[in-house]
Image (cartoon, rainbow, N blue to C red):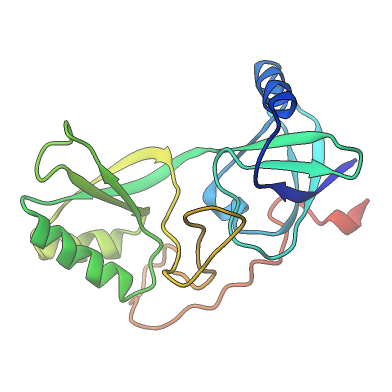
Length: 198
């Protein structure tokens, strides 16, 4: 099994061409946010080849990240569309208020600005959680379920491999109980199997 252990910050023209050709033949990884938070895991390319990822703890893998192995082979990571909650509001202040309450609960958030978005033109996205959605609706915000590639913001003090954002590993998942308590999650467990199994 090929093991990819380095994230490339820049690609040569040759490498860009190689990645484009691999994409055409489905030789890339389509990974959701939860999987991309891990530094060590096994995954399967869209074409069906099993590969291993064994990276230093340098932040979350982002969509379009490219990894390289010791043999110089490349693999690109694409952010997989996943079920999330989209939050909009009639004005910027109300949306900012919603972002504050979500941030206070350490919820990973993705921000969007679109001129044809409607409402204030801004939207927040977070992983589905009906308790949080109800809280936001009680505050006067609008929520709806959708499916998009989820790329949440990082903490302001984080840096990682030349990216403008990755993500803090302290966050909340969908739970049916109160979110005022903190939840510790280990991100070292492999979501699709351990590399040491082989």
